[in-house]
Image (cartoon, rainbow, N blue to C red):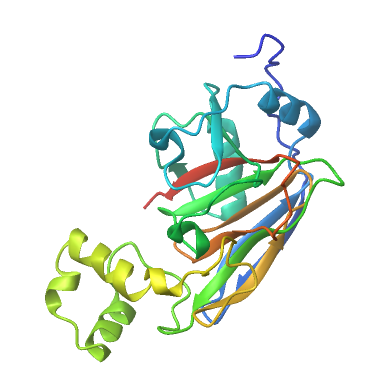
Length: 254
């Protein structure tokens, strides 16, 4: 942990500029909070001094590096719960402060990174790059072949109707493994990804861009992580600069 870490470093602005979006035919909720932190420059400097790693058990299929601080995120989660409108809890426990970084030069994206993906439940992210070093953002997408905009945690009536239309065996939806196979074959099929080494960005034959959430300094965004989403980074962006954000994976308490 950096020696200069202050107890007030991650103080949230009590009055951020809030925007509420309903995206796609499903009216999927997206919340944006600009000017989210009181001390964003100090947070960025702290993040850049950390030891980042690309170890798979830390980054998973994220196309970059991660670093963390063992600082309680509960005050921030409490604030996010208020913004989101219901109680949220960390998807992973403990939930440290996690930073992500990308520098795209000479980086080869795998097939899963060249199309949208989903997260566990609610995704919250804070862009930390300063003004003048923000490009692209995060895209939300519709899967054209199925017309889906999100994948529920458990199969619902829409998924079951789709499986019936495709004349799939009930075994696809009878177990978590079968449901995952259904998603990987029907939605995240490698044939649907970009052919060349780039992000899906503005979409292709199989993926339609519904909403670009622009990257801006000190901007928080929250959305249903089950919605198809991807980093929006054009070729040449971040070849020489580091793209930095803070990420939290949250669960809606029931």
